[in-house]
Amino acid sequence: MTAIRALPPDPIAPWAEIVPHAPHHMTVADLLDWPDDDGYRYEVVEGVLVRMAGTRPEAGAITRSLIFPLAAFVQAHGLGTVTLPDEVYDFERTGQPNTGLQPDIGFYYASRAHLVAPREPIPFAPDLAVEVASASQDHDAMDKKARRYLRGGTSLVWIAWADEQTVDVWHPGDDAPSATLTVADALDGESVVLGFTYPVARLFP
Image 1 (cartoon, rainbow, N blue to C red):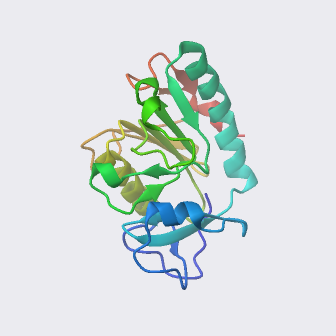
Image 2: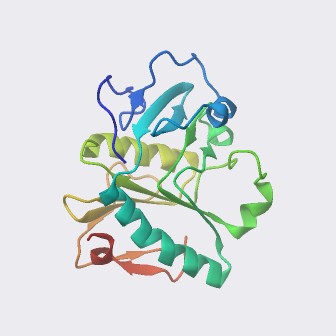
Image 3: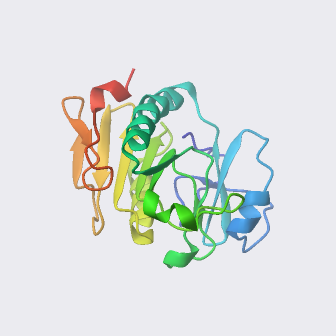
């Protein structure tokens, strides 16, 4: 999603900008109560509130092209839950206190559904995280976000790059993407979303 650069990005969350005048040491609970009717999407990273601009049409088209077939596959096979861009994952229990992230698409296993309370953040990192990078988000920034997901316990990260028409694939332990897929390749859910594949070419208009 598009990140606003009017203010410098926070070093611990370079994919976004620090929210001016936000309280210090915010929690994920504070994030859930933060007003979100101003067109921004908010995350909290190690107690720092950061923001990204709302979804632009290009990023929205990419997200929709994947979330619908992914959700249909997951539901048909009873694999778990696919989450929307405004659902918050709380990384507190995985060693990242006061950190709540909102992947453009998330997925968690059915076996963990009983841990999710209806009015609370999802209390763990997603098993699959998908991010659609904006034109103002560079590889270094999104690499850092991928690593943060993986440190929290995410098993598979996909980062889509519209301008390049590629998808970076990340696995636990990676310092750099395991693979960069082109329009000649297909996404593979591997053991995370077992049996799911999707042509990369279909992601990009």
